[in-house]
Image (cartoon, rainbow, N blue to C red; front, side, top):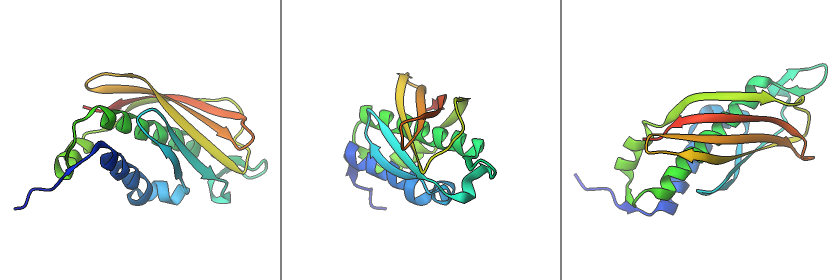
Length: 157
């Protein structure tokens, strides 16, 4: 069997982003668009879609969609922060490590109804250890109104 080539950190980050964008059916169904990603920050955009409505009388984003977007941006941030500190490695080894990453816990604070034409989620790492990363996530609409924020704990090692 031929060993897979060693990939640089930037290629690993591109791979992770492609997995979140192109291979996670739920993210595709939501319509998530990854607009920025690196080891220091992540931004995910969600255009309004009537199928994501939680309150049709007020045209408000469903709270579960809000939580899902926050979890997605937090998880992506946690993984990319790990990639930043990793040595270059082959794809098979990286995929095995990626398979062990997941959400341990998440808290969401809903600050105001999710009204808008586009929602922008951002995340940053509060703390990363050898096994766990804690991220802070925020969701705003296109007018800059703060819709929700969250704190997520992710298994990364």
